[in-house]
Image (cartoon, rainbow, N blue to C red):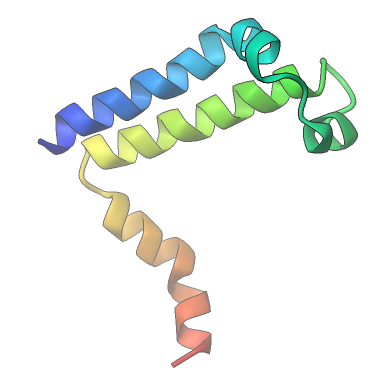
Length: 82
């Protein structure tokens, strides 16, 4: 079941990458992306980076290593509050 959900998440991420112009036309520009990514179109680059992050999460989920990755990323923060 994780593989199917991971593939769906990857498909959503790929849609962000492949249909960036559609997202830009329908949802408009994002001010934060425009301010912090001034080169290469700002919002277009932001949508593509967001899509790549979603694809990465989908791969982690499909490979069933999302738990280990989250433990690695959040481990130092969790140790601070114990």
